[in-house]
Length: 247
Image 1: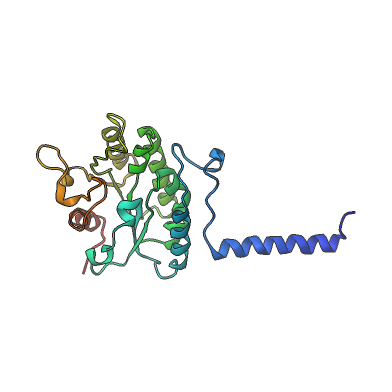
Image 2: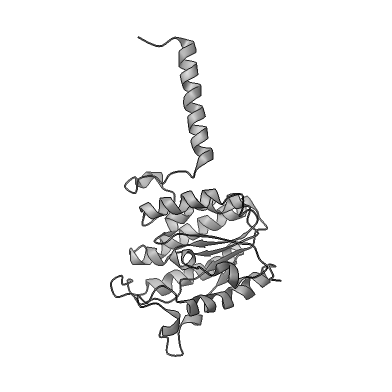
C-alpha cells in the first residue's frame, strides 16, 4: 500500500533536510576506492581512515581559515608543523594529507581549498602517485584539472605548483624515468596554464645529484626540520613574486 501523498511529501522533505544538514555539517564523504566511476581524474585512488579524520578537522577550521594562503598536497605539506612560523605576517592554512594522490586532491580541492576563498594556493602533489606507479601523463592531467578549478573559482588567484622533490625510497621505487617525466610535464603547465611552477628538485640535491642528507628523514622521502627550512626559503620568493609578501 502506498503512503498518502501528504505523508510522502513530508518524508521527502525530511530526507532532503537530512541530506542538506549532512552537507552543511561535514565534508562530502570519499567515494569507495573501488568505485572508479565515482572519482574524477585518472590514476591511483587512496582512501584511508586518517584522510577522513583530517578532512573532518579541516571542516571545523573553515571559518577561521578564510582568506589564508593555503598549502595543500600530501605529507610534504601535511607534516609541516612549523608552517605558520615559516611565513610570519601571512595567514596560512595547511590542507595537506599524508598518503594523498593527485586524484584525491582533485576530489577534495573545492571544499578543502577553494571554499576558503584563499589569498593564494601552494600545491605539492604527485609523489604518492609515483609510488603507486601512476603514469606521468595521468598525474599531470589531474594537476591540470586542479588548476582549472582554481581558475574557474577566481581567475586572479595566485597558484604555485611545485614539482616533485627528489626521493630515494627503497621499498617504494619509482619506475625509471617517471619522476623526471612528470616534473617536465608539471613545468610545462606553467606556461600552458599561466601558473608559477616552483622546481623543488635542485634545492634538495648536491652537485652530484644526490639527496642532501640533512634535509631528509631516514626514510629518504620526508623532510627534517632543516628540510622544511630549505622548503620555506624557496617558497617565500615565489609567494613574493605572486604578490604575497611577509611583514
